[in-house]
Image (cartoon, rainbow, N blue to C red; front, side, top):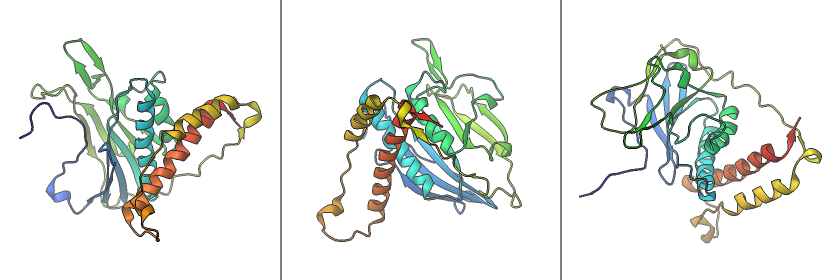
Length: 261
């Protein structure tokens, strides 16, 4: 028997009649993200449920967040024909004063996502409440591909007296999709090519930040001891995540310390 208050991890509950349309396609090694595909007619959705770490201002937080963002990016690249939706407990408000939001913004723009906070039909304004400290904040979000926004008929934060959690549930009402909906992923658009002006950047800051970030990216690959070509799908996914963590650190530092033309 488990005792005490459980915490952490992500999961998905779904109606049995939707089982043929849903498929779990990946999960983060530390249970901070689960990836599920949903196919209905011409609509293909890649849904990523997240539980991000709390921002304590430490390097450990930065490394943990980069690890999850690397997983998300590598998973998205495996499903280029799917619209993306990232939802869950982000543990940050969508404000540039938040380090977590600033880090996520790079990925959000690359995936062409928009946040649904302003769509709340109840105008609740928060999703987390700490009654003892009299503190509220909006840290649970739904980010969707911009092409999917028009399919959402209602979005709302639920205030329900039967809810015993300190978080409020967020609900997407009636995703207006039918079998004839034309929502194929033809409008991903070409990514903007950024020409970084290293002659106008802070190279010392860039070298320091990338050195610190990259030195904290560590992964163990069991197949390295085998001494032969590895066919394990899980190893291939781990390598993709490792690669995307490195790219994410380099891109983030580039955007912080150099000028892009």
